[in-house]
Image 1 (tube, protein in one colour):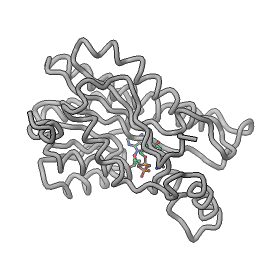
Image 2 (cartoon, protein in one colour):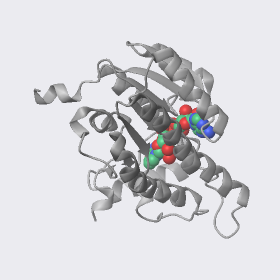
Image 3 (cartoon, protein in one colour):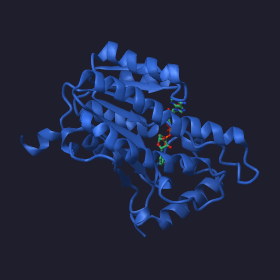
Image 4 (cartoon, helix red, strand yellow):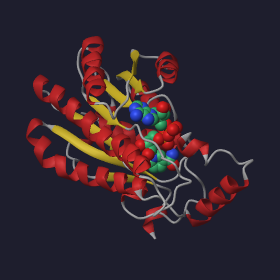
Length: 263
Ligand code: NAD
């Protein structure tokens, strides 16, 4: 097969959680542009609808809270019933949590919420997707959104939950790879650096706010590529990992961070 054909997703069905905004929206666009039908899942039904209706190919919107076991089960069932199959699942939905909280004053409630969505939500999405893929018997690709904070601690005061969840995601990807490989299911991660999205209440976007501006300046100073990421910069990696071009890649997390972790 010609190498560029390996990246085509024509005839495949994909699911993206947290598809209503930021990185998930970019993933949904990328997968659709590469030829896949895309189920756009989000806890915010209207943003999922908006993204699904903006895609040129076949798409649907599903309202789902990824931390709820029954809802995640129904999300995959609905994808199967409306798209007929599931080849690619992006477990992407996540939150920043209450970034005002600092350990040890941080609350158990904040810890639990971040772990429930950012780690348990990934596990649940991967589990339901894997069950569907195994039943169909044609393999598949599961891609989890980690973070550079899955590999290092933060440089700002923190409640400790977000980076712990992301470290969990990186190792979950490693841990499930041998279990899923006999079923021809590849599981991988994408670890973004800093990207301007709505996460953390849009902290990285609100440049009118002095704290945000200083934070962005500090990030850009420490990033070898000298700038915050644009979600467009993640689209190629998403399509690669979802495609036949990545058939021999499993258990690893690809870091897309402008070089942040390199030094
Ligand atoms: P975002 O806030 O723009 O998008 C997150 C989306 O997830 C939103 O549409 C939101 O409604 C949805 N969501 C939140 N809770 C949900 C739940 N319980 N169930 C289903 N959907 C839910 O933020 P983003 O930056 O695009 O975040 C996407 C992923 O990328 C997250 O896992 C985040 O941790 C990760 N990430 C982001 C950055 C960054 O700098 N933006 C860096 C590393 C990792």
